[in-house]
Length: 460
Image (tube, rainbow, N blue to C red; front, side, top):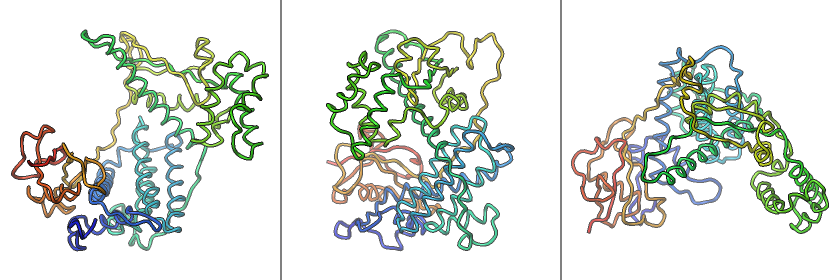
């Protein structure tokens, strides 16, 4: 934002447009340390949508609290969510003490919101009431130094006494690192399996080009290994010893190969050895020394069994089975390793809810979590046929059509000005269109555009 280019806002204009808390959020996110702060209107738009989505979600939770799960809160995902809340408290407190406000916003709002979203997704039987309300309380307290007005409003809404500015900082509970590692493992392999299914469908579609589309996989078997193959176990052990002996770094590959070539369990796999060594080096660089561990700190098979219904739901499969790699053929036993299961996807006829159609079984429990609806009306704008000015980020932006109070609704002319400002194109003539072909220019009121994507192109 620069006065010389004309894309600046006075304090009053900024408050009217983004509200006090919206401005504080964006300024906190503008940068830490001695770097120049970078106030971006697109970030302000996105931030204020986050705040009001959070506010609306709390309203819906309060209305639907009686439908939330109660009783024992000791399931795998309940304990993971509790640990993630505790980690957020610890990290955010440290960031505030070091005056790293952008990092505090990251750990105390963005990442904690992502943890809530993940918890909502993985809970096939619904979220636990006590954990949800603990999350709301902690989230409100962690965000209150940056957004005090909204947080004080929420504090009173959840029947807390007094003002939030007088409230104590949340107490840090137990943070189970092993449990968090298991959760990250589940998230990573679920993502990998989704990609595998997507690629499998694409490959089958190519083979059936011109004909009827092939059936999608509806059954998966995940083979889990309890240990590495002997040659990989030996390689990892020797590489770890060499790494420690070399003061925390690997020697060159020639020295590693020399140390390995005379090992009897490795000789048979010399053709695969170099690629495996390179893989381990890359994994250590990315994940640290834990990449050379020969066992996992958690029970991999039990984690998958605890989340079997979630895997079926997330992967769109009627049935997912978790088996030991010892039950599979020799190739799967050779290729699988701890933390790297092998999954086989198939299409089975007559399979509904994981079993044959003639067998009665109750369908999986539906997710009854309330939907989240943003308050502010907005429009997504994509720049077509030209590039944004230097300093503007990306060719897609979100523009608020009104301020958080539902006031100051933009006119068509003001919307065009906002788009020019976001993309740094104030000196250009822009047209807003309903399609990427830019053949139909929009006109009239703008509120009917809420939630849609429109296209901005240069007028000739």
